[in-house]
Length: 204
Image (cartoon, rainbow, N blue to C red; front, side, top):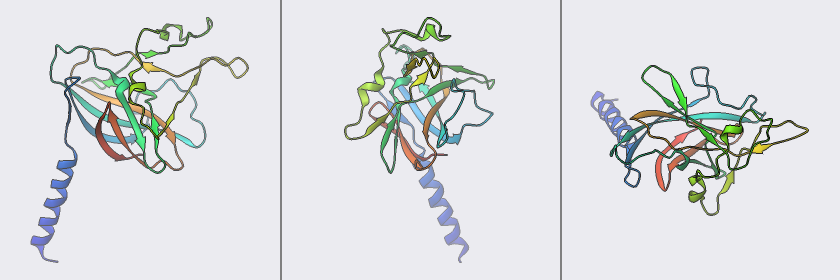
């Protein structure tokens, strides 16, 4: 094959990748979001609050960079993130979301539940009915929503909750978004923030 054709092919491939890796500006929230990569949950990532992953499921991690356009805008709302899987289509809310700092340390967006945990629960402080779950504002018609209720109780005395997150002021940051998905047939999907498509990606 002609070397010049190979070079042209490589240039076109790189150009295509560059155009795909565009940043998405969310004017309403005054942030810019850029998809970085998708990876399996590995030991390098912070641990989630789920102790056991059920057979047939996995946790996939989507990394994005967040840049503030207007520092006066206020708190960043992570509840607007969600994943739409391909074939079949399901809508997933995030299981957990972390902020990475420059020293490879992580902080979690605070978990919130609208249902009061039992008095014996170690997560009683997560109860806050005043924090809006904005994920519910972006339910896609015709797409089944997948909820992962977490049992804070026991098998005999269950105390199940679906968590969302407390918005907070953040600097320009790398965000790690955890999704709990089927390991059998969910191979790709699209990450959204509110009504805006952030990226289409294979799911590891």
